[in-house]
Length: 319
Image 1 (tube, rainbow, N blue to C red):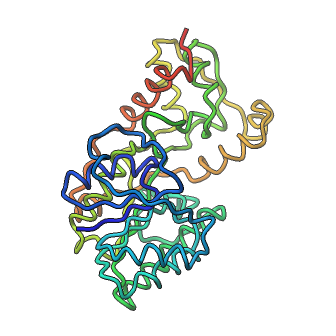
Image 2 (cartoon, rainbow, N blue to C red):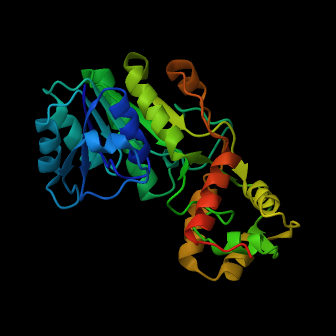
């Protein structure tokens, strides 16, 4: 089966491509350049690389070049706008495509209304990123219902793993708070620390894409949350890290306004707001039932692997 992976060397693609190669797929990896993937695997020697930059190509031209590959499966990991989605659907019609998989985000949902949050509920996205993802997903599902366009939408949580920066107990990429915890220092969390994060190992996200391809008939027209079994509160996250570093917990709380003053960095507090305002617990029941999805890693295991990578790379120092 010929399979195109757009954004093949990123977080998800680094784990998905080797899975597909080992499963017998003829994989064409699309990226702006030949970046080094996050995983070392002999499977990378068996792929075909194609350099394409979605941001520099005319949108219709990019979609047309993907369509010209005449693949059975297209996995689109870096599609961020409704316009790109519309061009892709238009271009792929008339090819031998049997499955288009769109990487969305739990940010489609915006504020949580009922937990566990099911996939097909009214969406209230908070920013343009979430609005574009939600609009693309709705467009794809409509194309499936009206025209039979063979699509599946997958919505990851906060993707983690070795090799990059993960979301910290501050709800952003701040590593200072993790280093403070490692030294046993006191930290302050916003509000009551009850907002939740949904850390998911990139390999489990890749697993879901792979299982959706394997179970095409059950996946078509569906959306799935790519998250772990459990969510992690900011407080629980911080508590776990104190335990991980064998330190006595020292955690206090500040109102949102005072916490923003305490952080003193508008960019970091804005990023934190966008993560924790979307707090929730997202159901994976339809993924388990239809795809046989079962996360390999718990949330805590995912965080532990990522923090160990910080130590190995010298991102933080525990001493």
